[in-house]
Image (cartoon, rainbow, N blue to C red):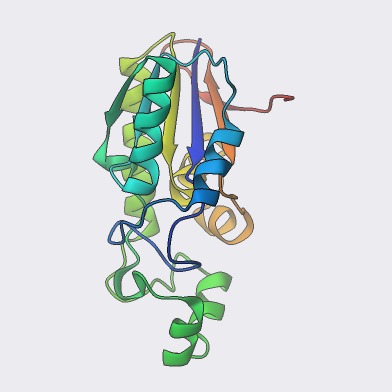
Length: 196
């Protein structure tokens, strides 16, 4: 069996903003605490894979050193691009267009910010990388340190849910962990809910 866990990064410096792959804020002290609180002291991970963004990669490196395992950076695990919203707060977006966030929340697939990556291409990028990781590391336990969008894309593909539903209805908190299980090579991935 292959188990792939995905952990969302902790709180980044700069407060609440739309951070896609164009904003590279590091974690706050609170963000580091959230991450360490989410991982067990004695884990069974064989490898850590990370988004290239510092809010993920710095923790991935620190955890790999602590647990004396390898880690690697995979560019395809970076967050979705938010186009002209990159780095902006919700208040700044509303000041420019009072209904923009409301339209986006109601239908995130068809109301993307100007210049943003499409949800379909993002989901395909992440899912292809996930499947490549699963094929390359059959029988291993992998941790991916990434973003809320990456976790949502994986969940949407595993559960065969619409991108609209997953992106408008699923909240992924800082430090949240999503586990998936592939019981046989080439088989379907399943969502794994574990009692802690």
